[in-house]
Image 1 (cartoon, one colour):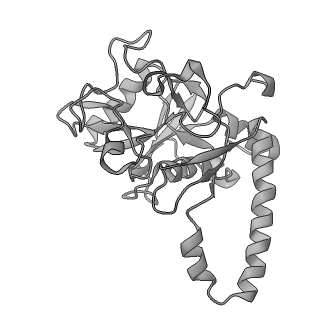
Image 2: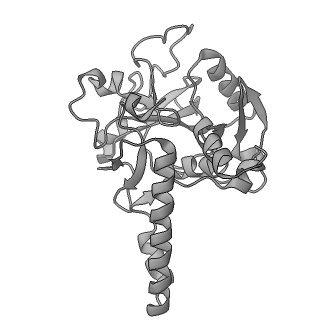
Length: 274
């Protein structure tokens, strides 16, 4: 896909949110550039930030306290780590992509992540949160959850409710037409019907409000939008199904190979084995 082909405002550069609530009033700066350009841009920004931090460390003995306060807003997507990419866990394989579940990786087992941190854990390995574009792939992830009694996981599914999504008739109403896979920028099929080529609708028919998903239930409770897509395991006596969930909640994740990140690392690290 060339830069000129790109339409959806999902090329994330920055996540700027209040410290205590990563899913409320969030926005992503949009840049009409390809993934490699975004990564190079981020690399330059990271270098500038590191230099600034080094100066601040020399001048301010309370730098640790400052980090604790300032490390949440303005979070960036992580750059891939070539060494981690080369040695990434490859627990199962489907149609050209490797996958791993964080609870099955010793250094990640037992840890939970909010949605963005989950993406960043995966991205360090040249992967991203899992995207289930087909029923076969979805069934594979459902089996993983069932066989390992996993209560929930994050996926790369995201609601296009941030800066750049305004004035898009094709995304309205958003709860039906506004969902997409952030890992590959593909739109998710309308939520109110069985996806084409599927034998069932993966969205749950119930939830906190006893309504079919997505229902944005938490917004009615505390004003937090349920903008991220999670798979829940029978939380509402509904079996294993998709639910919209506020992005600040913490869950284990399934990571899936990212062709863009793998290609980027391969092109910038001659001879690397991926």
